[in-house]
Image 1 (cartoon, rainbow, N blue to C red):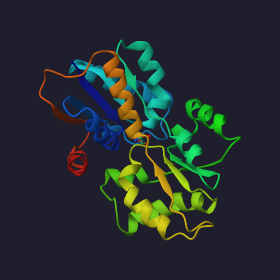
Image 2 (cartoon, rainbow, N blue to C red):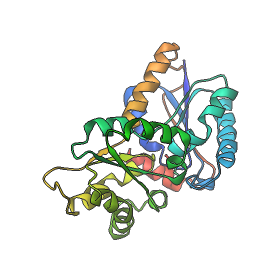
Image 3 (spheres, helix red, strand yellow):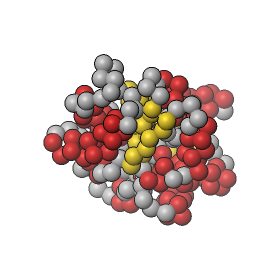
Length: 256
Ligand code: DGL
């Protein structure tokens, strides 16, 4: 029996909820968007740990027995503290450097994430394991979170913002782009359009975008099976909660 808590700085974690519900459709989900404090990307670790504790308390009070930290930035900043302080499992996000490194044909991968994720020791350790084999280029997806939170997923403004961070990675030869922030998959159609319009060295090959959410969903399923937590007696479904205005959250939920 389990109620699954899931949180993000905003609506980005819905891209993870989408994948999780594919593998665990009968569970009861409580999703918390901390959009009154979004973005987390450039906030201090201490600030994010405080928010993560407050949100976990709220999710646990609503019955959560497992929590998905559907935010790369919060995972990097706070998951170790959460695991040490609460007696429940936490499932986190991490930029999918490994599958990108194994799959690249050009030998260059691009990582798009927040400043907080790119400077965290968790990411730096992962990067250290692969950078002898492939070249790793990074960019903060500057303005991406704001686009998603304002529901500007397509159109000239979205393309302009996406181009500024994505094109330098493509120009550096990246054929595989790691989406290291849970907001970014909502911009995938715009990223694909920008990539298709950008001349590249090996222009006969498509750029691949890697979202770790399906792997995270499978990991959650394994953890829940191990602990005998599948099947809740609460109604299957999703409760959507937000610390700020919930308009974007509700509209993006309709899209997943
Ligand atoms: N969605 C988040 C992540 O995966 C955080 C974005 C932000 O608040 O800056 O990193």
